[in-house]
Amino acid sequence: MPLPPIIHEDDDLLAFDKPSGLPVAGERRGKAMENLMDPVRAKYGPAVANVHRLDPEVSGVLLCAKTKPALDFLSGQFQSKTADKRYLALVAVLPPERALRDTVALRAPGGGLPEAFTVDLPLRDDLREPGRMRVGRGEGCRESVTEFRVLERFGRFAWLECRPLTGRPHQVRVHLAAAGAPVLNDAFYGDPEIKLLLSDLKRGYKGRDDEKPLLLRLALHANELTVKHPATREPITLRAPLPHEFEVALKYLRKFGTSRPR
Image (cartoon, rainbow, N blue to C red; front, side, top):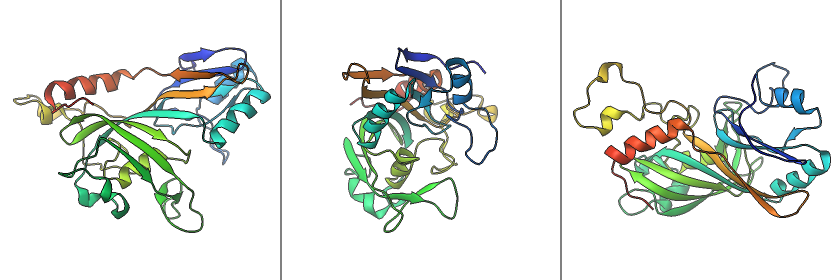
C-alpha cells in the first residue's frame, strides 16, 4: 500500500495526511486488516509509532514519532491536554427537540447553533453497542470537553471548527450528536435519512432519479495540530489540506445554499 502524503518529516517527527477509510493501526483483537502503521514501519523501521489516533472514517493530520524520546515527549502533551487539535465538520442542524436536554441551552434564538459553544458532557463506552461511545454519568465516565465555532451556515447545514480539549474516542462526533447537530454521514451517531443533495439546493435540478449525494464520506477532517517539537521545544503547527470532496460540497453550498460567513 502506498503511503499517504507526508505533511512534515524531520529527525523526530513524521506526519501524514491520512485519507478517510484507512485505520491508523490494526485491530487489537488480532484481526488482520489494511492500516497505516504497517507500511510506515516497513519503510521507516519498527521504532516509529503513532502519537495519537484518528477514527478510520476521519481524514487529516496524523502525527508519528520516530524515536522513543520523541514519542514520550509528544504523548505527554496529549495526556496533559496541551496539544491543540482542530477539526472541520459539516453538520446537519436538527430541530432543538433532537438535542439532549443538557445541550438544549446551547441553541441560539430560533433553534440554530450559536456563534460559538462548548459541549461538556462525560463519555463512556456504549455497552449495548461495542465500539461506540455515549454520553453518561457516574462510574466509567470520563471528562470530555469540546469547543465549537460556526464558520458558515447553509440553511439546515453548518460548517464548524471543532476543538476537542480532551481526547476521547469519537468525542467530536458524540458531542455534536448530543447538541442536535450530528456530523453529516455519521453512520454511528448521525441521521441516515439526511443527505447532501444538489437537487435540494438548486432549483430546477434535473437528474434526480439517479442522483448521488455531493458528499458520501464522514464529513469530519482533522485539519490542524499544534504541538511543541521534541527537539526545539518550540510550537510546530501541522496542517492537512481540505479534501477535494469537501471543496466540491462547500462550493455548491455557497452557491445555492443560504450562506453566512463568520
